[in-house]
Length: 208
Image (cartoon, rainbow, N blue to C red; front, side):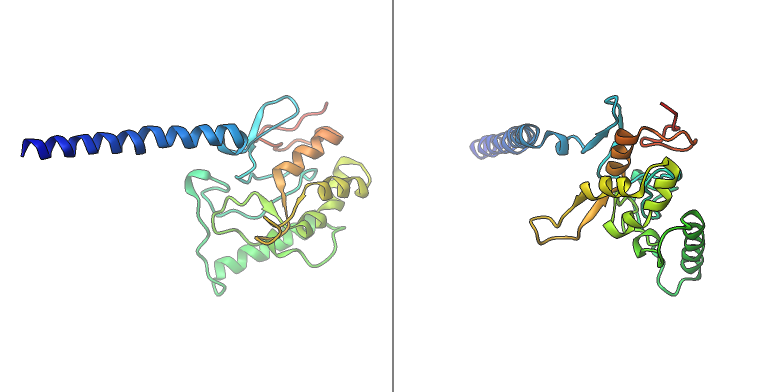
């Protein structure tokens, strides 16, 4: 009995060391060596090196000079502690009213944009944290952003096109644009807009 207990204890300790210490340290070491940015949360930095968010979690951008993402049903919007979809079906009047209101707002804020409004600008994702939109949804917003920043629409289009990500491994997913990444690129190229409102990271925009 004593011998069996000692064997079981040894096996438990060996398993604990292998799976609870050596394996996690090895995986962490490989991740930090080969993919340190992704392992640390794919953090995004502004021109001053300040962390302004993550490439993996969307943010709300209300200022006209910034690209805007999908609606979010996570908490009060893009709340990483309350990730969820709206769970509203296509027959839900609440969902219909929200989409109608969003369509009206988008058309009012983007009078020079072509019709129709891209679907992903009025539909929330299952997680409520989607940081990306389709290239079509990004290009649809070019007239508003160009007017707010007082630059030619072609220059805004160049920034967006340079940030389009293709399908993973050429097969999985769809082409997409990271909203925060584009907004940081816009600030880097044209400077922060002078109009007040949330900039990347949630801070108020300021002239520079």
